[in-house]
Length: 68
Image 1 (cartoon, rainbow, N blue to C red):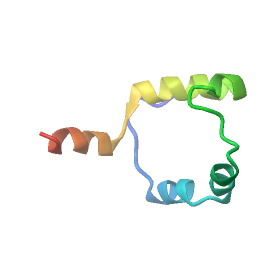
Image 2: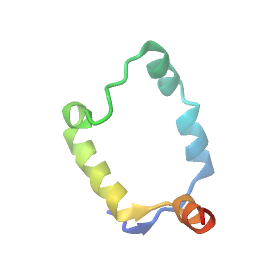
Image 3: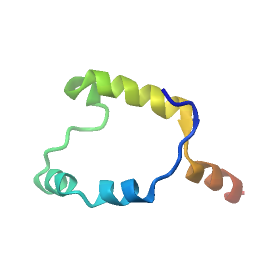
């Protein structure tokens, strides 16, 4: 498990927003509501919950510095 700052990847950011799988899910309405990850894939949901609490993004740091 990674702790601390996440290294941003422009390639992954773009591919996540332009994938065929995402396009189909959003257009057909096949998405489960927020918070239902525990039902669909509990192991992945637990990992993501811990990962998101112990790491942070460069962009969130920039947001904190420049928002004041």
